[in-house]
Length: 512
Image (cartoon, rainbow, N blue to C red; front, top):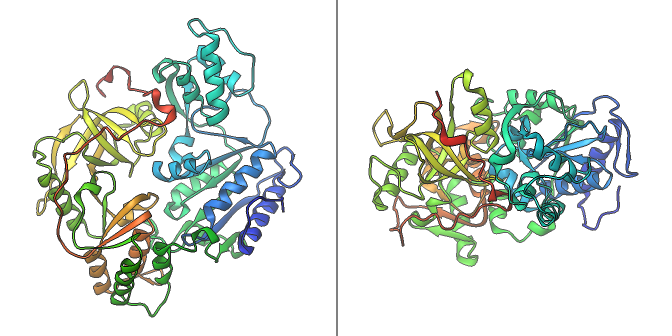
């Protein structure tokens, strides 16, 4: 195995070597840095482990080793049309948030949707992109100074983002990206994080694009709702499932992970688990035994629930205490993208919105109305270019009412539900510094006695919910809501480094 500055556990080392052997069959020798043309498909392999077992660390080290070996990393923001013949790697996650967690660790991840589509660059500015990517000489562009080129080169050297580099040179997204198109050519090697969220159709799509695919997933999470409790990596032959058993050293002193792993005890009942949480909260401030839902947190970190009725009640309580009118949204209200309602003839618009982060499950903050009726200005959490303006259909659900109230409705566009509370199923793939879990819903699941894939449903729900917390877990045991300490705000939303460009929709033209 390649000499590492980090210390792998035994099962991490075995997994690293197994992935290395898999890629060697496909012509990529990570140990010797020897890259050959594709030698046939290596197939699919999965690295499986619970929270804290070191999956992300392993993924990051595999990426670094492949990059040192000369493998080209493909991002979602630019891909040269010049065929270099180099071997390539794309690192994917199902959601914006999951991809942003990897990017914070120095891994250039993008969403699955983003890699399926490629941006179409204006030919003039594509010459700059080719130069930045090392495929040509520095071009001469009217209006761009040597200082602007130097800023672009310095940004790209540090961040490996073509749009960010062009923004550093003083350009806007609308200057150089003219649209998006569906990827036509297959890629090479794909790493997919949060693979427990994949359904069979997505898995088949990925196998069509990547002849060499490595999945990273947590078997203790909830399977997609249409998967009957099974996860795609469970269908692989056992030798292709690499299991990480040990909690990694950096995660050893983590009370949240201790609680998550305690759920594996078949003798542990719900009441036992709650006593364990209460005892942990007495000695460690990272776990809180909450008597009420903290409404201030709901604007950026939704309360996690099991039942839809609970979700709708909490959302309406949140809007009530903030004095939100029934017929309009307030700046700073959280939303969740529920998909795109666009006919087939608007395929280009769909590609544009999906590529910019408006995919099902995306967490969004409402910034205000757009310049035309039915449009909203939005901040897409976790997206590389978060500021978006889009035709919107916003649905506010009411307790005991079948039909939602729709304060904003373009004829077609991106649809949104309120995001102050979300179901645990929809929270998969996301993490927040502080996470609130509504415990009465977990208790209701325990009382029902349902089992999913051999595990009590309440344990799977609890596991997924508490492992969404990165720093602090609030286990809310009472059906109460705290008062807000101030109004909703948007001044805390900062654009990512590459987001000086907003990639706004052209003139907010109606979607006819």
